[in-house]
Image 1 (cartoon, rainbow, N blue to C red):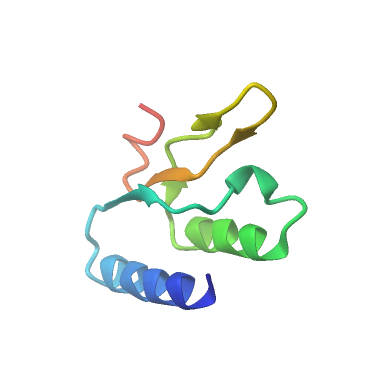
Image 2 (cartoon, rainbow, N blue to C red):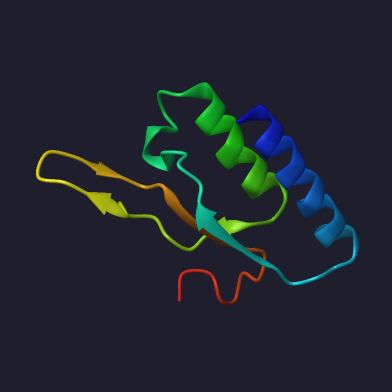
Length: 84
């Protein structure tokens, strides 16, 4: 997760320096709903916010009869389209 996050945030730095609008998505297998109890997930999510990206999915994307997880991620730095 550390190498993935570092590479991803380097890409975001480039996008921000070039003032590009961007959407990043994927099946990250990082359970965002665990951000309150898992430090690396919390740091991962904080870095998205610090780089001006917002998640467009905020509810579980993998649901079973006993649990739910948010592992599919879509982020954008175009605030006008976030959440639409």
